[in-house]
Length: 303
Image (cartoon, rainbow, N blue to C red):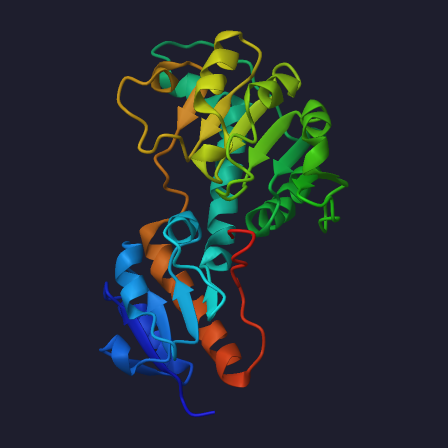
């Protein structure tokens, strides 16, 4: 196979372009000369205009692909890959930080202006249930094991997840939630996951259980979450993603004493481009060799 011609754009990503060249590709300045695209833009319409029939592979630069699915860009005419595999470890690390902050009451101590002892917990011996356990969840499983937590997982099929003591199908979500001391959401945004954690699911959680979301804000019904928090049923809630996003100033979640919010910052900027470059290089070598790519998007599933 001749060296693939790859367009990296429309936003310049020098480390990614370097990775393409290092992996044997030819970086081209015009998408009309390319047979593969590493898309770094935000507008689905711009990408759609570049999708000539001879473009055989498109690497998206984000982990979430809901906007591309909603815009009808994702099709079966070529291979699309997401950048999810590049960012899984970083997002899992952030989930772990939020989980530990929730367990140790750090959010309450940070807001306190006096020496006030907070109720703290440990994850050692606790059950942590990961909802939507894919790549991020698998990475988090590995991080939790040295801390002595029992990890359970929830996915669509109930197919066992390596390292999880038990894997539940999503049909048994409420039962799984009732068994957890900590619930971590890592699910993507799809039609099937929208408000997966609705009021009934949130009330199915064990009283005092903590909730962390690093997946997508739409997986949790925000209005229902506010209501359940008002009932005092949940322990700490730690969110890196919200619905709506950004969360408007004055929203009740900002001022709730049991809620900590980080503004969708699970991936440090300096990590993103280098990680994407490594993924692109790996996928380009696979593309050249005719072997399966990493992070392939299934148009039917929406992720």
